[in-house]
Image 1: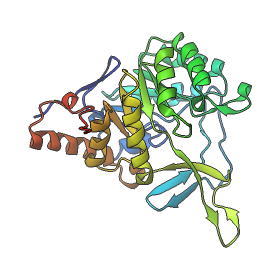
Image 2: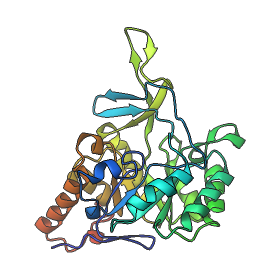
Image 3: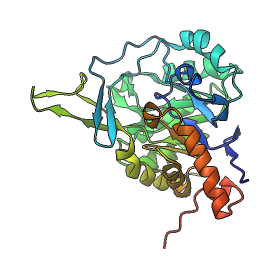
Image 4: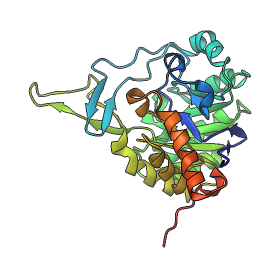
Length: 304
C-alpha cells in the first residue's frame, strides 16, 4: 500500500486530506457521521478575539456548481473556542489546526500567542483574507506589504507551524505568497473564496444580505489549481490546496500541480463522507499507478 504521509513544515499528517476552515465547525456535527481519526487534520472554523455576529441574512445562495456565502466570520470568540471546542477535539488522534483572523495586526498576534501555547493545537492558520481596520479596511492578503507585516509580527508570537491562507482576490497571488514566505510563513494555504454576487431578478435585490459574498465549490476549482501551480513556482514552503475539491481526482489535480496537502470544504455540506472518500481515492490511485508514496507525486506536473 502506498505511503500517504505528508509533512507540512514539521506537522506530520497520516494522509494529505484535511477539512477547510469554515466548513467543518469544530467537527462536533460531523463526529457522529464520520470517523474523524481518519482525517489528515482538522482545520477549525476561523476564530477571532471577541465574538462576531456575522453579516445580515440571507447568507447563503446556491449557484451553478458552487455556493455563495456571506457568513462574516460569525463565531463565539477565542475563549469560547478554548473552553467548549478544544476538549471535544482533544479526544481524537488527529492534528488540530486553529484558524485565526483579526482586523488588526495586534489581533492576529494575540490570537496566535494564545492558541499556539496550547498543546492541543498543532498549527496556526492565519487567515489574511480579512480587512485591516487600521489600513482603511484593505484586505491583508490583497497587498504584499500588508501581508508581510501581519505574517512577520504573528510569526514572533508562536513556534507552532504558521500556515498563511491567501485570498484569490488580488492581482498577483504568487507575489503575495512569496512575501509571506520571506516574512516567516511555514506553509501557504490557497485559495479562499472568490468574490461574487447574485441578483434576484424578481425583486431586483441582491441574493445576499451583504450584497457580495465568497464563491466556493467546483466552479472555482480551475482558478484554484492554476493559483496553486503559480505559487508553487515562487515559494519553497509546502502548499495546502483547496477550492472545489469533491473527489479524489480533484485532489490529485492540486497535488500534481504542487500541493503537499489538500482541504475539502463545500463538499462537506453535500456529503459528510467526502474527505474520507477523497483519502481512499488517492490511495487507490497511487496503488493503481504503482506510485510508492504521495511525496513523489507532489508537483509532478509535466509542462512541455
